[in-house]
Length: 251
Image (tube, rainbow, N blue to C red):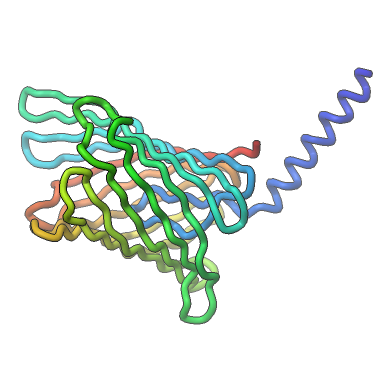
């Protein structure tokens, strides 16, 4: 009996290792603001975890510790998603902390890359008003969506961009979102990107930002990242810094 159990465990281990080698390396939606169009592999959980510090002005800081994006692959063209964020806001001598409204959503692939047509996916989330700390609850459900697109420039470089909109759960006016990034593989394990992105409220002034970062692929299923950015508009924060760790596993 023990020999049969041992043989079964070895068979499952070898199968999982072989299957993991057949998969491409982990593709994440962090550290840049541009969501990637790739779908999480079938029956895999993928957790993208991050910490960020944002200097809004001389007296106001915002810390997100942590932000967790949980993804689960349903099939080749569809994944479900859950986003949780714990915020710490410091304003002069006041400190407020708690969970942002939980975001529940999905990503679905629309088009494969072909010629000038980019690899394209649609991402949709909705913020649940009651699934938040008292300091961060909103009055209404808060939807958001993006079209995530990517072109292959070469074997080592890509060009990606997002277009979408989001609502804050308090007003009917949307804030439009755009991102544009290019990423390059420096080695088999290290990647780099630069990015321009921004938020365009329907009524208030726009908020444009720039950031850059590095990723390190520990193995096909585990990745570390570091990034930082600057505000380009009067309404933008001064700067931000971020660290992250993402991994996936098969259920």
